[in-house]
Length: 262
Image 1 (cartoon, helix red, strand yellow):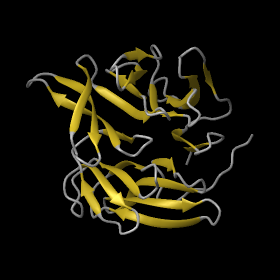
Image 2: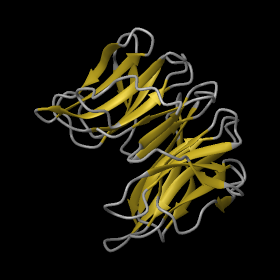
Image 3: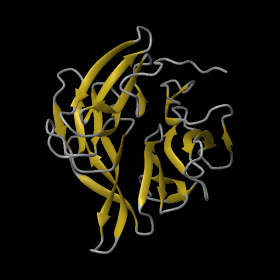
Image 4: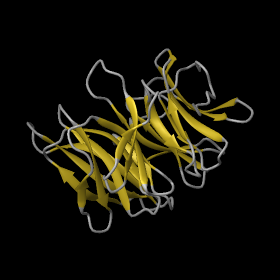
């Protein structure tokens, strides 16, 4: 059915993947290496070769993604790690494997031009309430600009840029449906793309007209892979795929990589 397995039953198991700007490599985040460790590594799709870029002394790595030029990797560490220090966002230089800390955040995505990083995080309003905040970080100056806040939602489930760098798609929820939203970075206008679903991990096609996401109808059910037009007018499930996670587009937009069962 057009599905090719590139790393059967990899050890440690993959939590999320990101396709490299170089077509024949995939970046893998693995959160269960053993002894409380996590890894970030690459798989060469032609040679089936694994190259470890980063491993924590102790602590979880939630996700990682390439910079558009392929020279750096953005790493999101959820727990305190002995080797790297604080939990949050780190930039890893692929060549010399040096690390630079940015800030504490919950989800992040690199802009297509490599100059900006978008982040989603939870901030306290007071002792009894919180809000979701979407911010932009200038990679060079480290200046943080907040562009969207939501006091009604409590959880977020992924974040991705449009290929032209003009918009972001993200998933928000609050102990119920997780719907997809699109925000224009300049105008700050927000459009709700879906209604009453449980969407996670949206990823924008390099072509720009389609977004892929994972739907998790309810706890205990099978996750499924969906495609939706960027204008929200067409949403359909890709058949014969279940228990999927972490969809990632190839740079040419012709293929989608994902983590499957086992």
